[in-house]
Amino acid sequence: MIDEKRYTLITGASAGIGKAIARECAKRGHNLILVSLPATGQQEVGAQLNRQYNIDVKTVELNLVLPHAVHELFDWCCRQNLKIDVLINNAGIGNYSAFATTDAADYLNIIRLNSEVVVLVTNLFLPKLREHAESYIMNVGSFVSFLPIPYKSVYSATKSFVLTFSKALHSELDQYGVHVSCLCPGPTSTETVKKRNRLLLRQNSDMLTLSPEEVAKTAIDGLFNRKRVIIPGWKNKFILAIVPLIPFRLRSHILKAIFKNGFEKEEEAPANTRAEERASP
Ligand SMILES: NC(=O)c1ccc[n+]([C@@H]2O[C@H](COP(=O)([O-])OP(=O)(O)OC[C@H]3O[C@@H](n4cnc5c(N)ncnc54)[C@H](OP(=O)(O)O)[C@@H]3O)[C@@H](O)[C@H]2O)c1
View: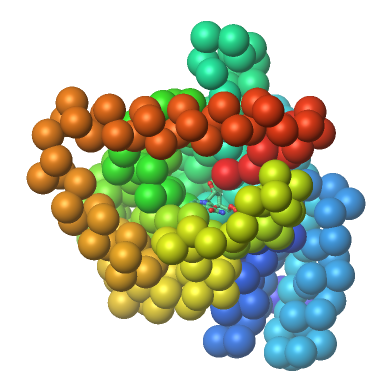
């Protein structure tokens, strides 16, 4: 039987912001297709949302950076004739490392997931989105989409890419009823971030930090209000409004001081802690 239900496709939905977005969409009655790495508890997340909100949840376990993975996902959705009217490109990884001493392979992996996969998923799924009079794409950038960050150089560059790509698509796809938003969260207390802070004996006292649930609610409200760029939290908005007023050299100097200090603290931490940081946003 052909499944005529509509689905929201979310990448990286087993944890953090993606998981909170999945719950926010479930609350609003969306059926879900959740995609993340194998064996990370996503099926349990899906089963719980299904029970709690009486929606249909399909889970796909895939490493999106592998060759053909995105095509496999697309083919799988086509074989099941799933109708998709919301696409959320959330999966992403970060770095906190000195460029001079880091293997390029680490960076290429980040570029692949944060930028190439976003373009590929969007391009492949666009015809499916266009089957509907109105459809929505949300790409997850970051606060750092607006700022070149020392020691997070590649991560911040990929997130700038996501922001520019999304803004351009917002204008280009509007004529087809496809609305594109870029979500740019500041620091968010995901489990990965909290665990790292605990290991580093660092308090989660960042004044700018929001919970994944707060970010998800603002994100989904913004998406359906067709906002081009969504920045959760008034403090984050305020900072990004005043940053351009600071002369570039001074801004670079301040950012370097902040992030060099953070990087040096990370380097002093036990090796297993550093490995986790490299894998987190
Ligand atoms: N947390 C923050 O402070 C923050 C701030 C600004 C922007 N962001 C952005 O928000 C997004 C989500 O971040 P988060 O903090 O929620 O991260 P997270 O808690 O580490 O979750 C990342 C999600 O992406 C999935 N994922 C990672 N690599 C993947 C791959 N190769 N293939 C498929 N799925 C993969 C993970 O799946 P597994 O669970 O299976 O590993 C997980 O579901 C990212 O794009 C990040 O850059 C985060």
